[in-house]
Image (cartoon, rainbow, N blue to C red; front, side):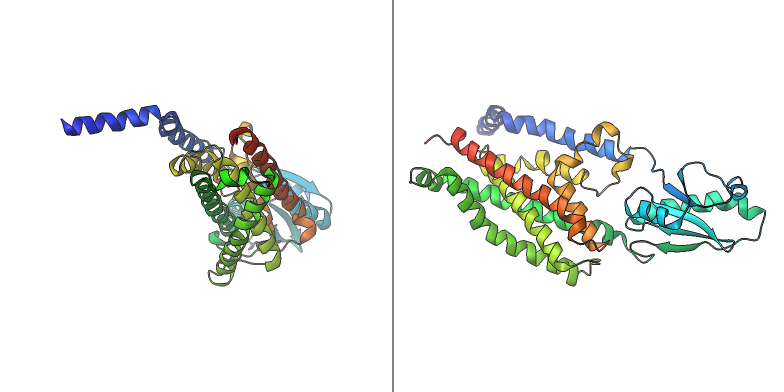
Length: 342
């Protein structure tokens, strides 16, 4: 009888919490749907450039299952490769076949080389087999899968932990009455928001610096660019996660409700951050990535760590991350006015 009473109390408690009820059903469905859409996408079709390949040779190649673009010079093909318009370009030099891979994604490199072996098979049946010379614009044949996903994971873990810690910490400021006392003081709302951002921000900067240093110099993560740019990106990622965590904590009444935002806010960003090949995902889903902060953080981190990019190549991603932070701060000031009526 006492157990029955306890069960009834727990059931009533959950049923009365509409948000928990919704997330118990909606969150697993959302995550499973994204996994289905990401992993059941179309097969990747490599984009290959042909540099002045004679027509009689092209007629003998098997060109199925690839997007072929013709180029008149190596410089044109190299420019297209660096602009992500190609995965590789193919040419014959002194009757020797050779391929130059973009090289930053080991899975795409594998797709290109597999396609090359199939494409050249008819040609090799009519002539002595020649080994394909392989070169890389970025990376090398020794590049590991961890080197490719490492920059994305670096940005993700910094974003995740800063979001969680900032959200819960700011929530405690509300539940303990500290925020209430601040709002009743002469301090303006934007000053309170800035104070919290700077206060929490100092510790998140220390955290981001230690994580970036450990990943690169202890775990030996691939690092082609300047460490200072990695620090700058991770600091902006931390600032974005910090302001987003503080904003969403305004809509949570306890720590459990704050954690419930994770499958709605963090998980979708993981799927569309570049961890999986987005070119195989349906077009109607491809708009999700560019509206999430982790998408730009991953782009910038991979650019610096794998391709050795400098400021001129990453500044747009950094400005967008800064824009996300400013937007979340403005929304938080508005949330202070709407939800914290004191």
